[in-house]
Length: 210
Image 1 (cartoon, helix red, strand yellow):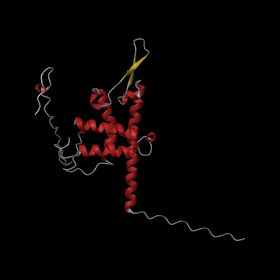
Image 2: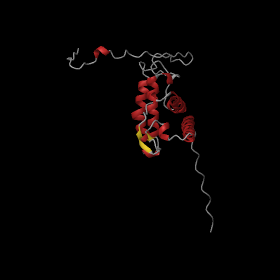
Image 3: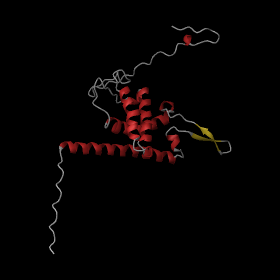
Image 4: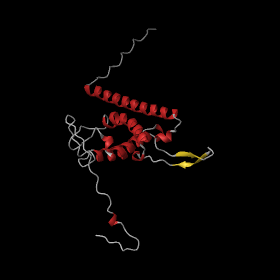
């Protein structure tokens, strides 16, 4: 009985410049996610060494202790980064930077133009800092495997796209910053006037409106 000849090996797929670019983009994205998660893991480890819980790190609800050391009622802590004290704010922003640079900008950011401005000093813009932090918290939750297969898509639709539309609008918080990276210029926009106390309704006084 004769042995059949071996089958010809399958043809190798053609590698095009587009294929290489796609591989490189995927590799860059995965490396950025790895680096960002490594920073988060290191931060969590440091906080655990200091006997702080994960909820303390993320601004979640903590559990207060009574005078006798027994657990008391939950003491809610704000998740809004603008409510953090100076030390917590510095630690939180430092943890966010790899995600902002290597995921938010490197993957989803587009070319900086006058119609799509960006500011490298974004932590100094309160509105930008708050919006980016909120999107970052949502990214951690919705890209977790426990959020299901649609989690990343929900994050992109409900958090990423509105974030970029607002931050990179010509009249957004970066509108007064120079868009040319070769000639950077950073300027904070003045906030609107505070509420006029004379406009507040007074008890027993009929309210007037225009």
